[in-house]
Image 1 (cartoon, helix red, strand yellow):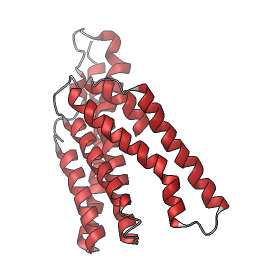
Image 2 (image 1 turned 120 degrees about the vertical axis):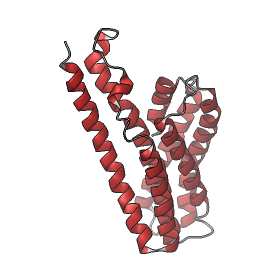
Image 3 (image 1 turned 90 degrees about the vertical axis):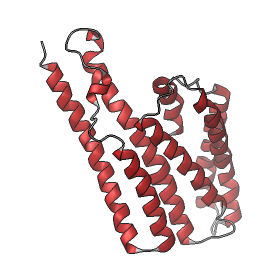
Length: 227
């Protein structure tokens, strides 16, 4: 997510480029934890909790630096229109920050419920929201680029927005936000109806991505038949 955002956000939202020195520091911090933590798991048994935290600190510092820089770059974007994809990115960043906050509680409150809440916020709130935010922008772009970029301006050539289903509107955003709230609530309360509703939101999210793919390919073929 971090590496892709370095390129996708400036490309699609006309945001200033991510500073390269800070990008290198972020990747170095993440890579340090990715190497050190698995090595400790193999070499130290049992692995004390404080040593896990020590190994995780470089990645945590990297994510905090990433969040701080993104918070300064986002308001500087030249494309000010707040569309569905931008809001999904923002939900992802919000959930990522909350996930780091939950992570910081582990040394104080070490429970399975807290770990599950971190997983919900990080995997569904952060990772899934950003993936969907990218797909709703990239699928129409790639469909248009590979089919029509050399015919831009000619009669019958669609705009990129024409390859995006307008019928779904902002539903992916509301569904994603509701899914995060439902699954987080299910984790904290262990109430089965919330678990089921959260599962339904996951199914709906996948269905809307499928419809996006279907719509883009269908419209591509329709416009492709235009003389």
